[in-house]
Image 1 (tube, rainbow, N blue to C red):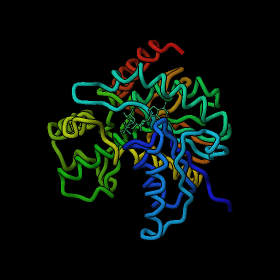
Image 2 (cartoon, rainbow, N blue to C red):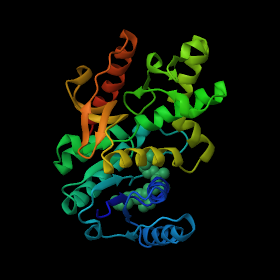
Image 3 (cartoon, helix red, strand yellow):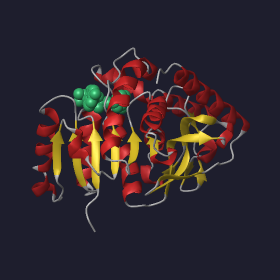
Amino acid sequence: MPRKKITIVGAGNVGATAAHWAAAKELGDIVLVDIVEGVPQGKALDLREAGPVELFDANIVGTNRYEDTADSDLVIITAGIARKPGMSRDDLQKTNAEIVKTVAEQAVKFSPNAVFIVVSNPLDVMAYVTLKVTGLPHERVVGMAGILDTARYRTFIAMELGISVEDIQALVLGGHGDDMVPLVSYTTISGVPLSHFLSKEKIDALVQRTRDGGIEIVNYLKTGSAYYAPSAAAIQMAEAILKDKKRLLPCSAYLQGEFGLTDLYCGVPVILGENGVERIVEVPLTEEEHKALQLSAEHVRANIAKLAL
Ligand code: APR
């Protein structure tokens, strides 16, 4: 079987770390693209030289030319600016919409059959931009956010309870912003509801910390935003797609009536396989969760309305 080809656009913190996870998992050959000359070339070669130590085989190249990305199976877009303290993800919109528009147009020219995973923020809006400028079928453009938000939530629960992260199942839906929707009703420790372990007050505090999970890191780093967990989350999606695993994961998907939402991207449970978003799983929500999801989606819709595409 020929190796899969993965293009990662943006060789910054998220892009380069995504390349690292993908290489370590031997998901395929990797092309790292950036607008800055030398950086993708240097990082790609450096990562490739880790192969003999970590025992992975992959052609990893860095480039500034989209010709080198031709016939990729998967394109991961991480290009753009990251947050600094005091900034919301929405503050990135104007700049990143321009960047994502340019890179998506270029990438799709050379890889019209690829699935696109969008990571640049504000995520749900950037996924929408990618869908519109590429003209791809909506199931082949998907945003990374829910896995990251869920991973943060699972981490905080594990830290609180002293229980393995492996045994914590949860779903965080909604837009990738301060009004994301952690679903407490679907949070279990190996099937045992979270409410068996923690009081409502404690759970509320963990939910709030999850919502603030991104800015907590930004405030520590000061010069940029999180990248280990975001890139790991993107590569979990990449693996599900490249290996056609049909995993059920929370991702930002284009909605056409599901959950009562139309013509926008928002975090929902999906089945991810070789065709991208193969199905949206409309799980029942409590009235409170349903309302919170609508509110979060309205926020995304308002930002989409500000786009000049
Ligand atoms: N084409 C290609 N690469 C670009 C372009 C462009 N037009 N514009 C910017 N880039 C590159 C930058 O040169 C830089 O290497 O995108 C990279 C961004 O890297 P970082 O500044 O390290 O940002 P990072 O932490 O990786 O975050 C990237 O992902 O999680 C989101 O909110 C985050 O929007 C941000 C994005």
